[in-house]
Image (tube, rainbow, N blue to C red):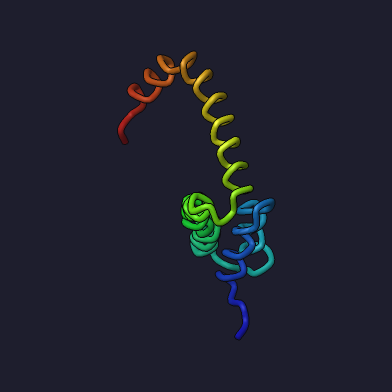
Length: 108
């Protein structure tokens, strides 16, 4: 069970440091793939970790909330409090500009 060319491009594009910067040249120059399949494989590989990255923090937080890991709960509480404190000060200063930027952006 070998790795096919699109899988190799997708796996390379998943890696955090090199991402699509290495996946596309790998597909085009090393593996000799056509541009469109190379691009599709690189994009799919680059986006594939997103569901895990969005899902994992919530699962970790729910697990720690049940007091199975009290030290992790304390760490996350401090982290969230610090993030809220730092974000709130910045948001209060920039909220009007952010609202203008958000509402003036084109819908398409």
